[in-house]
Amino acid sequence: MKRVAFIAVAVVALGGCTETVKYDAHRYAGAGSEKAGMATVVVAQNQTDGFGTGWWQNVNIDRKKVGDIRRGTYLHVNIAPGHHIVDVAYPAMMMATPALGLEGDFEADRTYYFVWDSSGGAMSEMIQLRAVSPAVGRASIAGMTDRTKVVKSER
Image 1 (tube, rainbow, N blue to C red):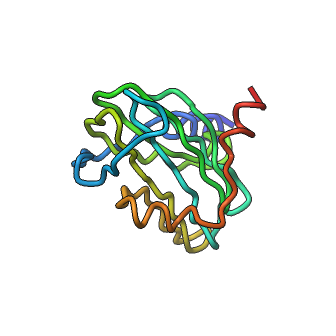
Image 2 (cartoon, rainbow, N blue to C red):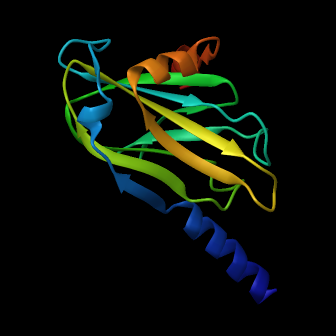
Image 3 (cartoon, helix red, strand yellow):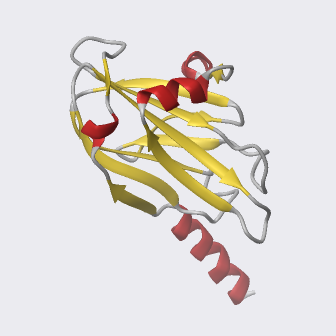
């Protein structure tokens, strides 16, 4: 029984950690944003198969949840310019995978695109969060469902 309790605590503790990587946000920025003086962040979920396709992923900026994405969806959020961490993760109760994040300096009046990819099965799933160019980002969300309004109405 003690062993089960230890494993449960370890899973919850690991689920709260974030694996972040610094990246050159300027390199991936697109001209313009949805709101003047702000930076727009777009996060898409490009998972086509794999163990976690039935789950959603929480999208956080600076460790604060701004929404969630599901298979074939995306969301967008406006943030103040400056240094930020964008991370995506399965809810801690469902998966013992830590959040994956990208950390960088975001500029006003620019748009940044991120894609959450996952493939494989329960024993060998590959998960990644990628910063992509505006052209790849726009192509990634074409045909996807925008969850931004759904997320706002759920609050």
